[in-house]
Length: 95
Image 1 (tube, rainbow, N blue to C red):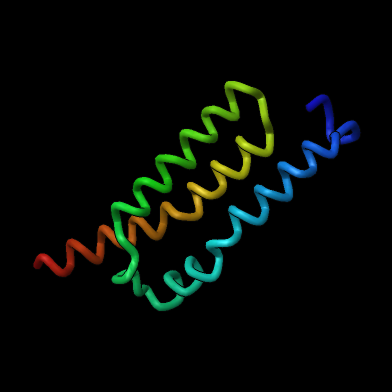
Image 2 (image 1 turned 135 degrees about the vertical axis):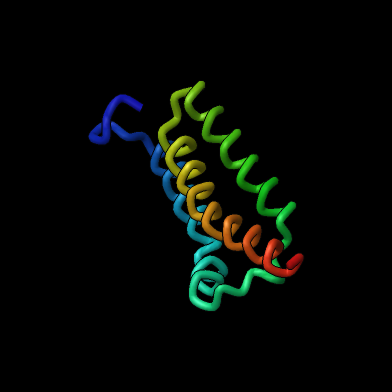
């Protein structure tokens, strides 16, 4: 991608896909933030998801694809607080 002014339809498609997939988790994330209820979310799922998103972002860096880089890092960043909440929940239940 040369610049924002010369974005192709492929770049725009990538941004649309990134917006839709990254923010599709927003309802679950907002619910978890508000209620502090993460009991039904599997920690292994979240760790695998964030690992996958981070790997995709690294791939995006290698191929220099801004939509892949941005939206995968953004997606990983959205899930990190939930992972932290889940780990805290697990620790509290062990005590």
